[in-house]
Length: 302
Image 1 (cartoon, one colour):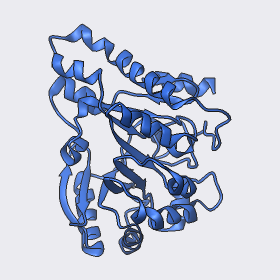
Image 2 (cartoon, helix red, strand yellow):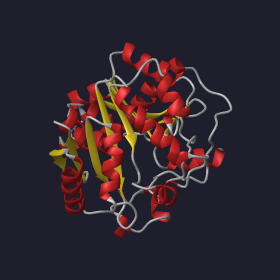
Image 3 (cartoon, rainbow, N blue to C red):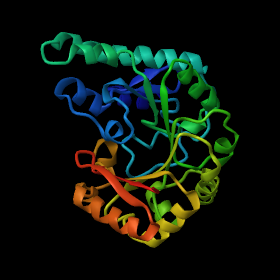
Image 4 (cartoon, rainbow, N blue to C red):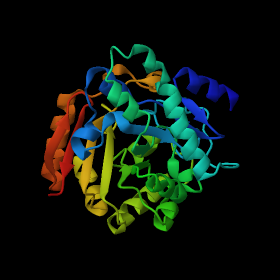
């Protein structure tokens, strides 16, 4: 694993403990320097500069997705040992402050009040890299952040329905990534490392309506020439999951995904809008917002 740690550090990840990591979000930087905000602030009211982007499973995943920005060659599907949730939380907050410390040398160029707030985050996005539900104490991690008055976002690929069904603490925003409309396209894009990945994803979609949390969201990561067809089949999966919101978002040509895909596979914002209009017509969901910089469209049931 030393090689993957070295690669991630070069990509500005801060490794925490044995298997967690933090990285300052692009939009945190934009907010501090330019006053611009990400779509999460626009859609859900989360302040971009106060968001802690982390993962408790930086190299654990059940997929090796073509669109992943991580070097997926170094992927494990089962943790050998794991750190305590409290140690992860404290380590991640400290890592955020360390990564932000360099901005103190450019105080004339940034919003000082925002920097102070950024060093005391109040929202955690449990995503970044890997599959977070492979961390055996994911409920304890969410509880620990909530006790510190954090709002919580969790993004899962849906291949661990047994974890989703047994969690005793759910995040405020629970995302399931819906990467494809059919099993063939799913296997082509996600390269699942477990048996029955497609069936497990569908099992998670089926239980999604029963999960009690503030917002249930389906995230569609759209890759041109790979998964932007069969809209009627997407709609059937959406009907099964009954999400509160759908985020239709373009794949971004960044990181190690550039070794697997071409820049032409990154949809334009106009492509995402057109796809979303067709999806809305097919599924009954309405387009309610969008963020051109992030190439994302938000659809809602109401």
